[in-house]
Image 1 (cartoon, rainbow over the protein chains, first blue to last red):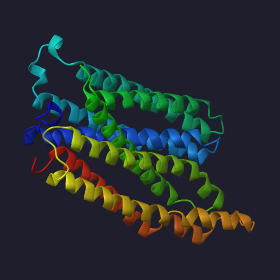
Image 2 (cartoon, each protein chain N blue to C red; image 1 turned 45 degrees about the vertical axis):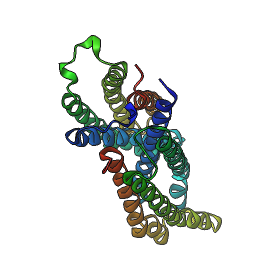
Image 3 (cartoon, each protein chain N blue to C red; image 1 turned 90 degrees about the vertical axis):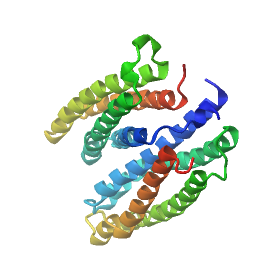
Length: 153
Length: 159
């Protein structure tokens, strides 16, 4: 049997499901948020939609993904493996998840201030920064998905 | 990373694209429930096109790379129960998803008609089309099928 066809123990499946579902919701929220911000062309309603998609979809998705990641990490016993023996894909996944989470929080703070400025009749400059950060996050998470699925190294 | 690992990565990335597209449509469905003017309805169009593109890429990628993997990887066969179940769910999701898309085309069509007639203000019929309960039901079914597909892919019943 190919290593790609290995069937994992049943007890690993639910944590993995939560991890993958959370990551999918996170990516979906980033696509929705970035698209709304990109096509807003200064329209306040669309800018708000973009921000709230990030806040109410991406962020809960990130939390679910990260909880699932920690759960499956301990179920698979990686916490008992020395750092130097852990595979590259695991390191890439953790690095992007954690740094990405921090960047997501910064994105939400900037976006939240941007939405308040829009409501106060000021320009959408901060929401443009939110868009750029969202696109960077999206690119980073695509790399993370590739690493977690293809498992290089 | 071997060729089959690349194919698996593309298969999983396609699944992400598919679910991301479904999430985009949920965001639009919820946003649309408050929209009653032609301009605001049409403003959602480009975002909907992003959703359509990601769902389409996801649908094509999951089936193409998935079928390849079923043949290429020792230990999997196209007639395995969980793979047949996945293909059936994919077909159901594809059909229901297409009908969902058709349902949500009524609102922008109406918005274009209203704009052409010079009616740019709030319109009750447009609001009702944006709030279509049939559309919500169809998208719920599509999303449920996608979640079942994910369950099937992770648990691989019978494998």
